[in-house]
Figure (cartoon, rainbow, N blue to C red):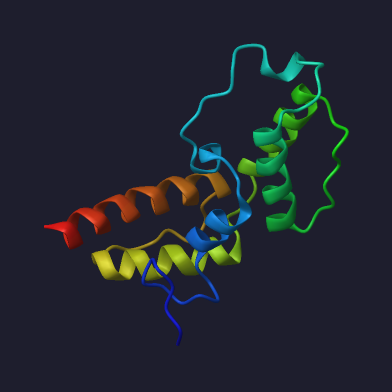
Amino acid sequence: MERCTHGLDTTWCYLCRVDESGAPHAAWGLEDPPEGWEFREEPMGEAQAKYLRFLCEEFGYSFEPDLAAGEADVLIESFLDEPMTERQAHTLELLAREAGQDVPAALTYAEARQRIRVLVTRRALRFSA
């Protein structure tokens, strides 16, 4: 099994997938949407388009580059409520096993993303100590 820079199987590492996408830190849930986000009519920005393209690829949908920013935000929010992807499940399972934790089977994409972020942070702290 070939390991990536995160120490995981390169075939299933969700973290590598996020890194390779060029998606902004919003992919990790580090940014809250602005107030009135669903009504923005201007074209989506570059960072938003990268993140939406990433999510469309994750879920097997075609990316529509001509969406308004508000439409893109609504679509992004809907993806976050979907069940976690297989790639997330494998990454989460490996990280949780390393940390001696169980992984709930039924997580949303956003919940899995959050748990992965926490486990990665704890893992980095363990290895840096």
